[in-house]
Length: 65
Image 1 (cartoon, one colour):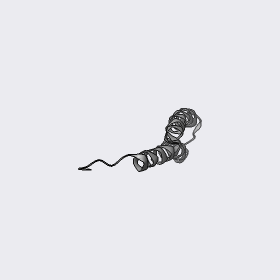
Image 2 (cartoon, rainbow, N blue to C red; image 1 turned 180 degrees about the vertical axis):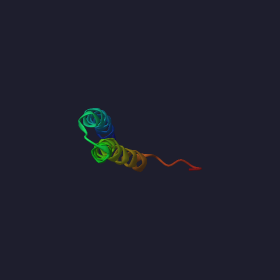
Image 3 (cartoon, rainbow, N blue to C red; image 1 turned 135 degrees about the horizontal axis):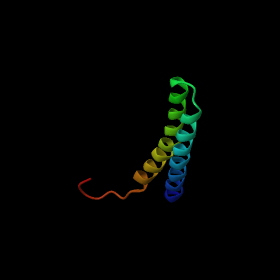
Image 4 (tube, rainbow, N blue to C red; image 1 turned 120 degrees about the vertical axis):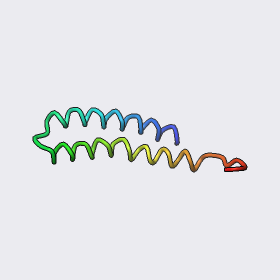
């Protein structure tokens, strides 16, 4: 499950980068650029948070942690 979430994180980051570059070229002003940037970041950050949480929940506790 964790590996799948990390793969989705990589896909989200690539899609976010593509959306950012294409969206900034098509934007007509700062509000549109900000909206495109927010969606592009969300495509990478949300899957990352899910993958990181799953990784931490599955991590074995060691003495001293």
